[in-house]
Amino acid sequence: MFLPIVTIVGRPNVGKSSLLNCLAKKRISIVDSMSGVTRDRVSIEIEHEGHLFELIDTGGIGITDIEDIAHEVEVQIEIALQKANLILFVVDVRDGITPLDVEVAVRLRKVKKPLLLVVNKCDDPKFDIQAGEFFKLGLGEPLPVSALQRYGRVDLLDRIVSTFPEIDTKPVKTDSLMKIAIVGKRNAGKSTLINTLAQEERVIVSEIPGTTRDSVDVKFEIDGKKFIAIDTAGIRKKKQIQGSIEFYGMVRVERSIRRADVVILLIDAPREISQVDKKIGDYIKTQFKPCLLVVSKWDLAEDIEIEKFIKYVHASLPGLHFAPLSFISSFSGENIIETIELAQELYKQANTRVSTAELNNVLEHAFTRHRPTKRKSKISKVYYATQVSVCPPTFVLFVNDKRLFNSDYERYLSNQLRDNLPFSEIPLKFYFRPKKRDAKIGAAEQKDLGGRRRR
Image (cartoon, rainbow, N blue to C red; front, top):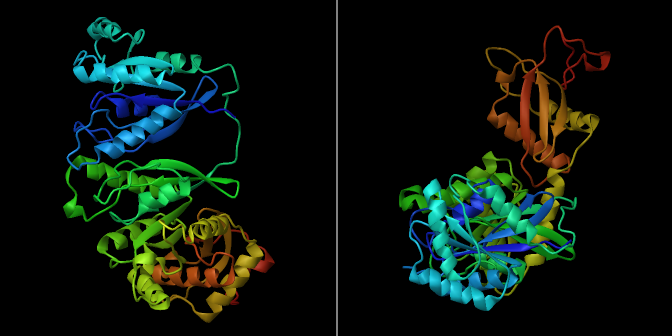
């Protein structure tokens, strides 16, 4: 299927990111009054009137970045322009035509690709008239919009899809791609890994901490199978967060973890596991996401024994003691393919269902070996259990009193199921529900899982 690419460009602070969010009707790109917030190519697939296209947000042309990565931002803009089937040139009606707008217009004429001139911030009818000033740029009819108020959104989408060639751009039902969120502290090597997977300079790699700000979805393919990798901003201690940009970057990291099928927690081998690593690990645990602990820059680690390091990692991240480890070098590509294959295995485990009989056999054995501690002389009973969902595998246990089953016993049951069922490396979720006294049960259920007959 042909998927048209629509690239948004313009000088800094004209509302490019707001426009992407407006057209997508989602908060994808970070929006802030400070210029230079967007650095990487941020993309989203959008459907309109039965047509599907990829919309790409880019950094501001002419950005002067205090962190001296303007060249890397420019490279990403140029790649997006070369890939584009249609360019949206965004200008600001309130500022009028600026010298930098003129420079951008001259550059876009040389690209020689279909272009729509979008005049943003027209949130008052009087600005529709002022938008006519942009005819002077010689790039066709200016289209007035207000990204924040979504004014002109449908008209702009109609114009976008009308430019597509007369071939099939309609959505085709495909299998949902497996999403892998790559998270970790700053400078752990997330963007380098993304570029290695994508086999192109898809996101900016810099030694400057905090280069990545948005969460960026990147499609890649291994052995004919397609995936989506989610690059995320590096996280640091809460007290070190500076301004709204880093705050919203952290919010997007958490959202990326929630929508991922598998999470890769990238651990920087030359550095010690920090409080930030532990915080990320705790959040992954609360979301019950399959997690792969990937040790990056392993080629830079000297005189470290693998077995000791594995014990160190699991001791530092006890909530993820079941998560497998993988050692990689993104620069050499060592063990990258094997790591993605391991992520696929975790995804398979998370989608596994077991029969009620098989589940209850394991739980009966576990319950016989170890019962919860008595509470006020009350003895715990588990009547039966069933798996109710996957991703994560979720189990409902019908008991006499759910207060008798604390978090320690839940961890015990989790370990028992991981040891005896095909869930060995993923988190499991439990619900304990009291069985109503007047509920009708069959003869086979007259005993609890410990073998005791109900009174």
